[in-house]
Image (cartoon, rainbow, N blue to C red; front, side, top):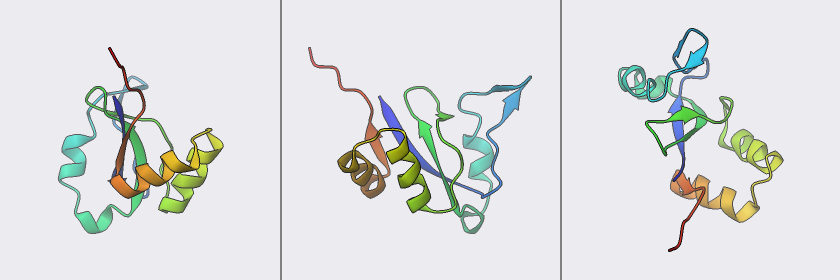
Length: 93
């Protein structure tokens, strides 16, 4: 279970149907957008096919600041920014 940073266009809006986010619907449209146009950052959960859990940020620093405001510890933010993904829950049996 976790989250990942997804590169998106600065004006990106995750696909919706009838006002509801469509889980995983970002994969295909983002695939066809040129990498040079994906200049912004958005945090997505990756437990399912993925849906956004943050606003779109034009800088990694903006994303990091928002994560801090959401209560993320500095070490977790650093890990996420360095690796592009991070676990949000670990289950030990």
